[in-house]
Amino acid sequence: MSLQHIRLELAREADAPHGDPGDGYDLVVMLDDQARLDAPALLAAPERTRVRRFRDGETLAVGQLTQGSDGRWLLDFPGEDSDAVGFRLEDERFVAGEYVSLAEPGGRMRPYRVAVVNPLDQP
Image (cartoon, one colour):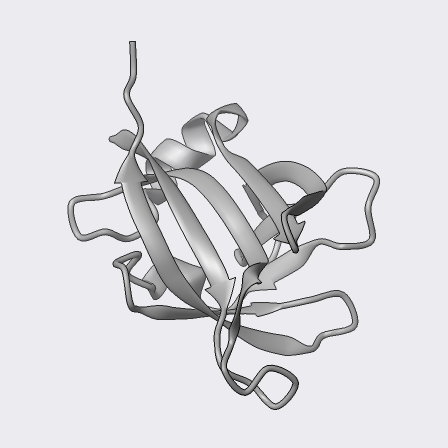
């Protein structure tokens, strides 16, 4: 169980036919040996996770990855209406070039490309 930095960038969609690397999320989470979310580790130590919403070089919100009462993974931004819900996030492989879907407030599903996965050094 090691912490990984994952960058998700907006993939191609109607509003962004070429995608938009300036629109996305940075995640610091634990992955298992299959490059999937390490659910037991995440549930045991949610305070170790971080998520950051960014657009055009600006941080819009910072929070944590949490699991909702319905079992879905949430990019939880306390005090914000900008929480995002992962679509089958527990099944996704976080490997550069793969895609994940996140539902934004209001339910709009948007595709994101895994742009970066890097291990974080731990003391």
